[in-house]
Image (cartoon, rainbow, N blue to C red; front, side):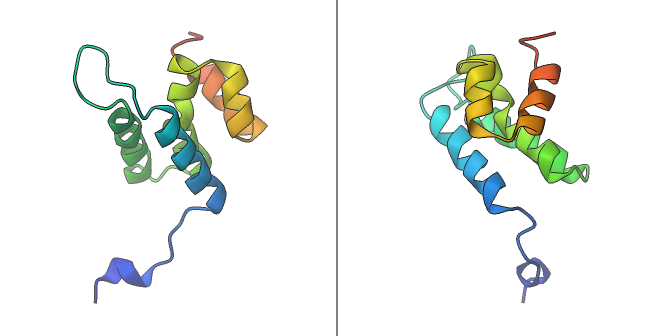
Length: 97
């Protein structure tokens, strides 16, 4: 048996909801200058966060940072996540730097 199958999924239903939200929000968006789905960038950032031992809040920020940058800014972000995660993304997003 795969040793990973013995472990519980270390992510909450809230994270899974935010992951689904980000996927649907960016479903028709491509990376700028490429024919690659934009969501692949968010998944890649999230993978880096997980590999580095990031928290679920940091993982959620990785998945949702595109909401601020490309899909409506802070208002859309606050509608999909907790205020603390939304604030962290807004403070670190390239749209606000």
